[in-house]
Image 1 (cartoon, rainbow, N blue to C red):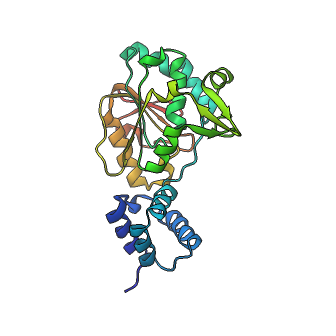
Image 2 (spheres, rainbow, N blue to C red):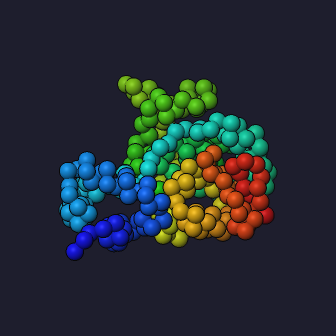
Image 3 (tube, one colour):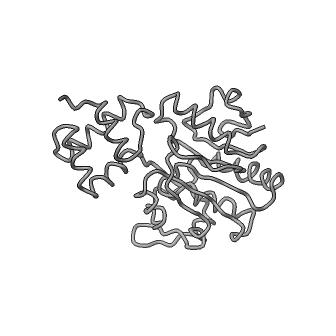
Length: 258
């Protein structure tokens, strides 16, 4: 029997419930082949056997699949829009108990950025961010809250001084910021979406998805938002068919549910 990429996709789904069909095949196959070669394993069938038995290799694989490239206040000009326009508008519209979801949150840079951005407008004890990712390893890293200097480079100076402590060459985010985020495992392509959110932030993740998978995720986000709620996407993304999805374009990377 020839163990081809189709075999691998099915085996990975059975093992992890991650659907590789939703990812661009050429790109993802190349990534996986590189990882298998790095581990000195020959063939997809042998690799699947290793994943079943070796917890460390399994965690490495999931971590590798989820493509974690993250940083605080990524694209600072978009966070200026968040500070000056989006947050004040949401508070005016929905009050101070905002429901915000950071989807595919990776190592926590985004939800923690959201807490800090909101802290300019609300007391910390009124801020709650729901943050999800399908990779338990990055959620563990997010809960640890330890970041490189490069990762926090774009954080405004006052917030950096207030909420980070230097430990060796790394920076630890304060417990008071960490306490405002609830982390949970969630697969955007498989799991049920939470509802009645005032803002959803999902940035620079869907670029790895096929057009069909992307479309499905945007439609689900639209259903998850309250009327008047806002979707904030990454600078590498755009929703061409936003009207069909049921959204209005607010500005370059912000969309609103009418």
